[in-house]
Length: 254
Figure (cartoon, rainbow, N blue to C red):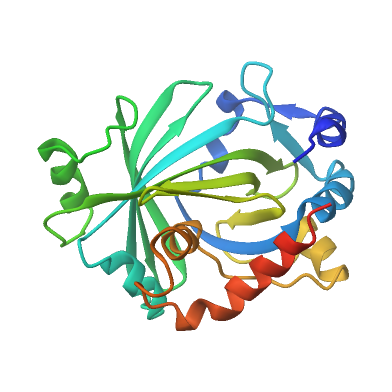
């Protein structure tokens, strides 16, 4: 996906640095996701400059992320999401590529809130050690053995509210690798609004509402499982509409 125009836009934002973000860590939060196209992102971003600062790390505003997702042999985490279970987990290793920092993260979603716990690790291990497994169990996960299911990578724009305690991320250039397959979603942009409590007064929320863009529940992990392991091998009935929307976006790649 061409990024020259995007680079011009993101460089026009006021910067914010990691040491200024202590008040917006939001490890326990409400997440609201949206799905947009790359061209919609280019149109929306300039309207956000007044309300948000952009995270800059060592002069970089579009950093790379890599994640390894883990699940049980029977894909319990995926199935829980497919069943819309209100109390569910997600386990992953995440690497902030340019910063060379990696974490083992457990996200626990319960009653509409997301709680994230993490520990620092050394890179993406490809397997889960006993020490890693002990940490995962300490967060409440009951599955005894977790396996590496897929890896995904993307670039992320992170915005921090100037007058609202919220963060806003845009994930682009999504790529999934696993089961001897690779899948790229070039025109898909996943936006995620992270707040202490749900507020539709968020400047971003108001802007996308004016564009008739509604919140859209989507999981990169679940989409990756379907794309890499095949519809014939995993349940996906409740994700059919999401897959149709993603395919429609992909068909409109400029």
